[in-house]
Image 1 (cartoon, rainbow, N blue to C red):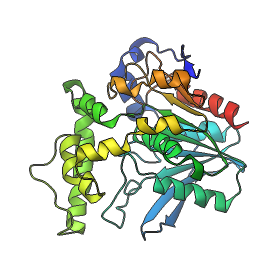
Image 2: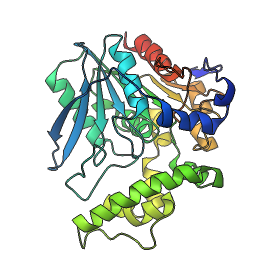
Image 3: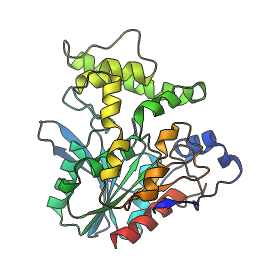
Length: 322
């Protein structure tokens, strides 16, 4: 019964406010000691992916997946890479298409359920070096990609992939988007929309006649995904895109240990994003729901030390990979 009834995460003071816990790391956390080596690889469809390596000379690899409009430079990615490096693991951060600081070459980009690039990067990493153990860690959108990948075709997962940990995942995308559209999430949604709209404008200029930027500019995910994400990736509508890519439906088929950590106070998540019933009877799907944590927050050290999320991910992965 991998439903974890009591989380070890304890928030203190202002960090018991979900929004404070959410915004503190991107605004104030500086992660030192991670020096990436960038590798650009070509994809089978003649695009490219930028990978950022932080190697420790290990035969164990941590593969990191960032959130919506994030990248390998986010503090939550670098903090996790540093923590695992210090414990002898190599770390590899995948920048999704268009997220590495340079627009990708094709009209298509990344999205909440794009798993083919993840599989390709895994094969590439294992071709470079025969790692005996690989663990995946994903955050928010990247966590949904991770969970979907591990459940959609379990038989194609490389044998070296031992387990995964996913934080703050909108695993039922449609209802989660209803939550983020509420008034108290307006600052987050506006930030996402500003970034996404600018990229969509670039695509419209890059591919005239194939992509049209809607006017007025989209103000929420329903408008943006309906006008842009869905059509350029072959989905009929925003609802079709969300429904086919929500990782919740793929969780029952998972065959390797996975830990999903969703804070109860995460303002981005709907009730459907806490699948306790499934965890109670699933042999591999673990669910932990701390009372606090916000969205990809879990602040436990405001100095230069590790966050609880890094300690928790390593504890789970160390147990499962060994």
